[in-house]
Amino acid sequence: MTTTTSGGKRTPAPPASAATRRRARPDRKAWRFLAPFLAVYVFAMILPILYALYQSLLRVERSGPLGLGEPSVGFAGLDNYALALQQTAFLEGFGRVLLFGAVQVPVMLLLALTLALLLDQVSDRWASLMRAAYFLPYGIPGVIATLLWGFLYVPGISPINDLLGDMGLQPDFLGYDNVLWSLANIVVWEFAGYNMLVIVAQLKSIPQELYEAARIDGAGPWQTALRIKIPLIRPALVLTCVFSIIGTLQLFAEPLVLKKLAPAVTTDFTPNLSAYFDAFANANVYLAAAKSVLLAVVAMVLSFGFLSLVGRGRKGGDR
Amino acid sequence: MRAAPTRVPRPGRIVLVAVLVLAAVYFLLPVYWLAVAATKSNSSLYGSFGLWFDDPRLWQNLKDVFTYNGHIFPRWALNSLLYAGVGAVAATLLSAAAGFALAKYRFRGREAVFKCVLAGVLLPSTALALPLYLMFGKIGLTNSYWGVLIPSVVSPFGVYLCRIYAESAVPDTLLEAARVDGAGEERIFFTVVLRIMSPALVTVFLFQFVHIWNNYFLPLVMLSDDRKYPITLGLVTWQQAADRFPELTQYTVGGAFVSVIPLAVAMLVLQRYWRTGLTEGSVKE
Image (cartoon, rainbow over all chains, first blue to last red; front, top):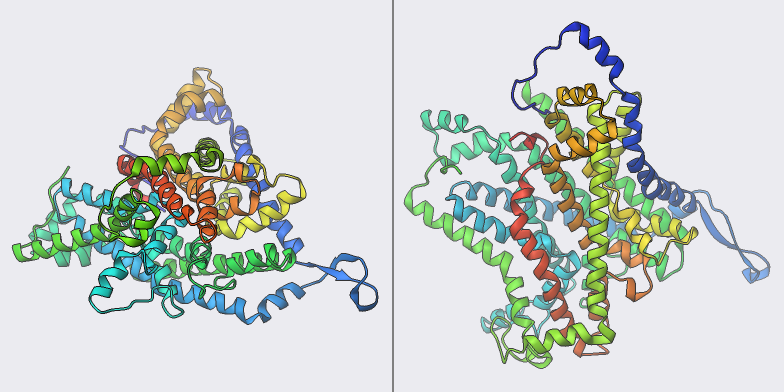
């Protein structure tokens, strides 16, 4: 993460005042500025995680003959984790979001990258108009986007089904085989424009001289895009990729809303749905806590793994 | 601002424009459908072609949406505004203070705190919703405005952005000059630093506002009283009840239309502010 200081206005300080300055510099005050954020961070992020970790180690135990006695909460060790990992449906949910991410993230980022590069070729007025159109869905909440697309998927209301029906096609967007990809379409629609904007921001920071040099060397638009732009916007691509991976694993609101329309979306469709239904439909918060912890761990491992993979790749590539 | 760096030859240009327009159609079509559908009666929602108008009655539909169930919809809208507005302002201030501290002071534990913040960036926020619900349930914060507001003011990503921005944009010499003039640290922060950091603060505010406005899992688990619901949660309850009360289908469409307008306008107007600060290197002008 390189940051540049704007301008070279900083003049070296005379040594005498540097000493007084060090004394004057109230570094301890830093904690006063940090305290409000840290207090809420600890209260609303770290404590809940610790509490969930603790809860994930508990279970309801029934005593007495036939388990009819008063239920009490007892220590379960890692049993909840074992139980979660033995549920085929829960593991299938993990597999499903991984498959989903493996397809949806590259498709979305490729679309975002393509649009960003193409917008670089048209006049500014056109570009800002188009950019606004592509970015609009980001302002629409995921559940409302899903409600919207849901109407566009359901036969009877959907104009898409009507049009395809006129052509003799009978698409079943909400069927067992298609619903995952119909869901992927919703997520692409929501976030492609946002990712495009992140890439555009980085494209704008490329110095013009590089383009001049490329033109003098006889590079066309294709070579300029492949050899200059894409390598230089690598940080933006890494950032969007990490956030997309995290977003994919958390898939929750979209399938929950679509569930009402598509029976193919089961209560175990994604890990988050599974944990939610354990807590609220099956009243097993301890199992739900274990599943939340598993999800968080997998998300952290994947995003850290991706970052270190990219970091190593960059170091190797630079040499 | 600047001319396109390399001109594409003519046949290529036609393809280029065609692709861009096609993409615009893809992104705008559902919104267009929504605008059309919001003008329809419940029966012509099913009975007429979705992409064109049929006996428009937008005013009546909107009145129905706003008055249904004792004016619950405007209440949801106000709740959304409260959660997102208050949450985003508080989150921005906390992030600015923390980011400034991490950028401009040298103290023991600085890197540890920053690593902790970075871990928070990578933690999926919905994986946190259930743990929050479990803990807040224990201390009686569920089903209250606080239950949604408190978690909303934490933005590790905001701290990260503010730190990077403050590092390059707030000159040490300026801070030192202010100290020599006898200004206290808090005063320097509120009068000088916040103003310099304002481009980053706008980004953090917008980011967090959209994040809270769009959030669904947290209010879903936290709230049980529908008078405290934000719009997202309210509209989904309408959609889920539409098989028992068919008129709710039209109300869902109308409500979605109303809720999309302000954010869509905000996106279009504020789109330029998202350019700064979203990527690590782009802090400089």
